[in-house]
Length: 384
Image (cartoon, one colour):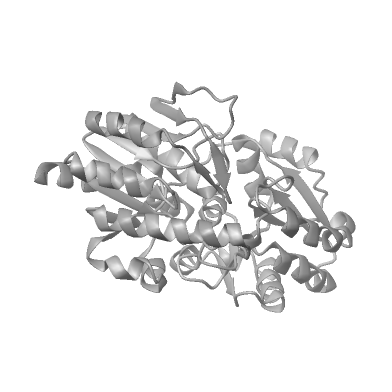
């Protein structure tokens, strides 16, 4: 099949949405499909068109930004040409351009599969309110046009005010999770690079420094953890400086994190190999997200495939990896003390929070995700 995937940001942009889509696109290409990704040229140094891992990536110039979104006046024209070449269109939202692309696809007789990655909840402010409004309109139009709406879990969909309106179109598909295999020698090398000492109890977090990630609750929980686990420390992997739209949040957190001294360390962006080693080195990985912008939290499953348990907010969708695997604990939403208690429980009995790593790895393998999409795509193309 000729598959057109459209989303606002694609790699090398770093977010859960872009990682999901990159893994899916690669897996579909490996299964013999012709995959084109239509996205933004969010960085002008990026090529307008290239082949990456068997996936054709087409990037459209950005005129201006609206909150975390971008305005690309030329994308409908390029989308028209790409849709005509495609057998099926897969839109990943939130995406401001999803509405016109979905309408064009249906006018041209192409089925549309909408992958609803998450609700969009931006901070207060006029620009953010406008962005939220425009995004909601785009989501409504594209979901109405879509033949199928893919969600990461029915748990999330049933609790989403938006997705619950489209229950007859919903198809749950597990997100794709894969990490490179790393040797014991590389893990030890990474231990030294990150300064992890014998006896350290490492609490890992992997995320952009963004308000919806709930970093402040881990900041407030850590002193409570240190009362019983004085060798505990947080290692934070991911972009923590100059995160678009999160400058005020970072400024608010800065003095609180500074007070933690060497018990908190930012690692910045790390390579895929280092990320895999990082998970092996952690005693527990935490996902303290605070709202439905987080629909699943693939980092939990990444950690679990390395044998590391997770502690996550008890939220729809986000709670599913812990509930289905038994590899970790849930804590009350926006409750630093509950988070500390969950972390201490896992640190005190790590073996009691283990699961079937091989089964988890198979369930969330990109090829399994691609196969599920392939079945959806094939059924729709046959109907048309």
